[in-house]
Image 1: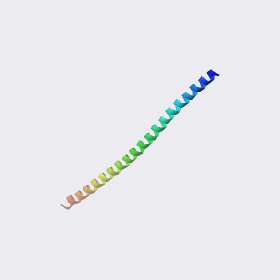
Image 2: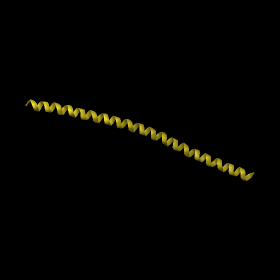
Image 3: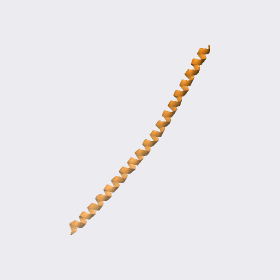
Image 4: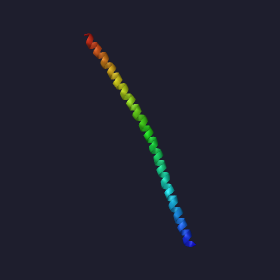
Length: 71
C-alpha cells in the first residue's frame, strides 16, 4: 500500500506541475492577444495617418499646380 501512495503522490505532483505550465501558457496567450490588439489598432491608426498625409499632399500639389497653370 505504501508504494501505491508514493506513486499516487508522484502522479499528483506531476499533474499539479503540468497544470502550472498550462496556466503560464494561458496567461502568455492572453498577453499576446492583448499585444496583437494594440498592434492592430496602432497599424490602423498609422494607415489612417498615412492616408491623411497623402491626401493633404495631393491637395497641396493640386493647389500648387493650379497656381502654376494660371501663370
